[in-house]
Amino acid sequence: MLVFHTHKLAPRNDALGARRAMSLRETQAHVIDGEGFARELRADVEVHMKELLEAGVRTGLATVLVGEDYAAQAYERRVRRLAEELGCHYVAEDLAPDIEQADALAVVGKLNADPRVSGILILRPLPQQVAEAEIYRTLDPRKDIEAVHPENAGLLALGEPRFTPSTPASVFYMLDRYVEESGRDPKTFYNGLDLVLVGRSNNVGKPALWLGLARGATVVSAHHFTSQAGRLADHTMAADILIVAAGVPRLVTGEMVKEGVIAIDVGINPVKDEESGRVRLIGDLDFEGVAARAEAISPVPGGVGPITDVWLLRNALEAASHQARP
Ligand code: NAP
Image 1 (cartoon, rainbow, N blue to C red):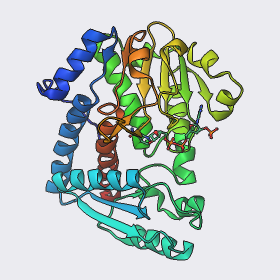
Image 2: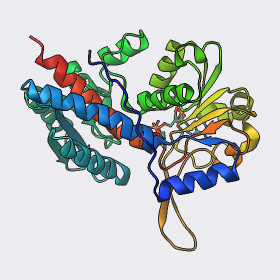
Image 3: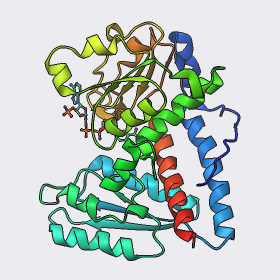
């Protein structure tokens, strides 16, 4: 297992930083700087990748994209750029939207067998004719860096992760670093706190649930039936730590949280600005409303997203390191 030591970098003095500083003055919450944490993490990944390369092992990442989903394509572009900047071997499998299951499985089989590929990311969504579960089961578990294969999902649930999926891992990396920077110990901070997760998807909500439990929090999982039953606010109101990953713009408003909550927004929702006609991204939290009551809040964009990209490469590096062992 690689051990990552985080370099603490000075905050950037740029437009984003200035905007954050302004939002800090306008709200009472601390706005968590995901970009800054992503830069720290990237610096560590870069050092370890170089060391591994000097030992003769090049990290390799493959992405599998079926069709032309806007968000998945954007993610593929970001990951490709990062992989190239870090000197990784990178393979993009861009498959036709009408690809048959057998052909998609054959692509996964080819990547499993390619010694230059250490980690594989299957981008969602997959079209209806491609059975997601069978694709995941076909992945070589040693290359399954998002822990979607049942073996890796099971290890994560048991608290013995081979890989920690990049989005929930980034949420907790952000939380741990924020807690640390605010003078508290992340090893004990979560003990007995009420952690409420909104969203229970296999790639974000459920793995986040295991990570929260492993840290000693009391975890509640809310989902669309919770909203349907009119009970969402009952739960969000109780949260000391609130993680929202539902994909519903401004689902959680200021009146739905308690004073002093630490609120992490995973949602990425494109919305069209009525005046300019331009598309911008907003989260699942009503930022201003929640920030007015929170101790800390992560913004969208510039929150969890940038850390997630780097974490994926970190997992590919870890996979390469494992696979290089005799
Ligand atoms: P998903 O697979 O669509 O799952 C959404 C989850 O939210 C489901 O569990 C659903 O409940 C729940 N939900 C939907 N509407 C709800 C409501 N009104 N009230 C309460 N719960 C509700 O989405 P995902 O892949 O987990 O992604 C969630 C969001 O995070 C999306 O906006 C996505 O773009 C974003 N995301 C961000 C990153 C990042 O790096 N920042 C990475 C991945 C995803 P049911 O299970 O009951 O249907």
